[in-house]
Amino acid sequence: MVVSDKADPNPYTLRPADGDTGDALRDVELELSKRWPENKLEPSLDRIEALMDILGQPQRSFPSIHITGTNGKTSTARMIEQLLNTFELRTGRYTSPHVETVTERISLDGAPISPERFVEAYRDIEPYVQMVDAAQPVPMSFFEVLTGMAYAAFADAPVDVAVVEVGMGGSWDATNVIDAAVAVITPIGLDHTDKLGETTGEIAVEKSGIIKPGAVAVVAQQQLDAAETILRRAVEVDATVAREGMEFGVIRRELAIGGQLVTLRGIGGEEYEDVFIPLHGEHQAHNAALALAAVEAFFGVGGARGGQLDVDKIRQAFSGVSSPGRLEVVRRSPTIILDAAHNPHGARATVSAISESFGFTRLVGVIGTSGDKDVAGLLEAFEPILAEVVITQNSTHRAMDVDALAALAVEVFGEDRVQVEPRLDDAIAAAVTLAEEEGDLGGAGVLVTGSVITVGEARLLLGRK
Image (cartoon, rainbow, N blue to C red; front, side, top):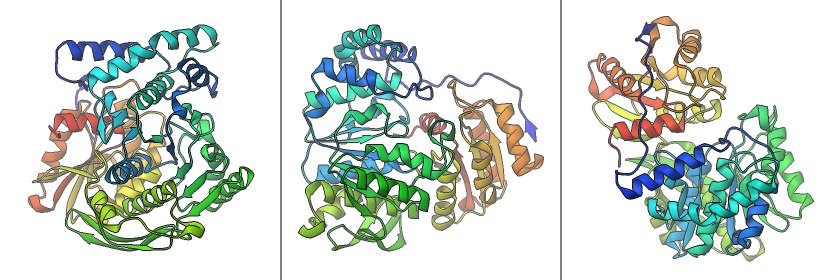
């Protein structure tokens, strides 16, 4: 194991340019940072419901599509948003965590709200947040306040439909004060087991809590225990279920330059042929099928009504989809890929996609994780495709200590395949050097992964726009 001198990680600035707006946004982020972080929970909807009451129930002023699951939520949300925008609906999208700047979490018509609007949204609800804080035994968390900001911003816009991703779980997630007509459940794996449950079936209990009475539940392929739990919830609340592989799915897919070409079957039974998706990996094809089914359900297509959406608009929408930090190629010679896989389930999907879509002869990993994940499982998933790894850490308090992460990496990869560079910029440079040692730049690559935060900071360092 090659070890660099221990140093504090570089405090990367995920901010807009300096100026009054930048200062105002920094002030808001500082205030939000003093609240409970997203990984600290007090499972209850009391605080967010109290805020919604004071604000006049803004979340009731627009229809919504609610998304939960373990992996693929943000990519699916972005696909749904793109489809709805192509059908000329004004959208609000709320996703987490952000890749580079907190404003990304709240989007209107496919673009993050401006820093000015973000500050305004916070200041507008700040007095009411303080009222809730004073009345509740536990003050509102960072995520709860952001959720309140998003719903207020969507109502103010106003949007035609909101696409909302849960933060964690479902039943008691702050987003679950909406009454979504369509509930989307991406594949459920083992993550946050200390909070959600030890099996996929137990985790599905929390996640299926977003399925509301009379809604349509659009469900990806699941482990048997998770599928049974979701179906049980749907029966309890008299919801309609559309299941991948049964009512909708991926019919065909083939690799294409810059992505893949797929044929999708919608819940109306019709096929959408020659749909280009500029994203890599079989999992993204399944995300696309899920997104299409969700939009069909929203428009009332399927079931006894049958029908099909305009296939040209479907093609147009998917051809414009992007998902930053998800198998995103940001440089060539050597190729540098950013991927936000942060649990074994996501890492396995990434490994499969890289093996299918890229012909690397030597791939070096740059890995920086959070401390509350199954890090050993993630490293084991990546081990078959990584010649060497450079262990690092991102700049946040949630980052796993670089020495502790390196110790785990040595157990998985062996000492000779592990190098330590506490600073992310040094880690990327070291990985590029290791990749180039192969002598064939066309077959050399670097994968930066382990955390959305690590990927976001790498994106800034590499100048990705």
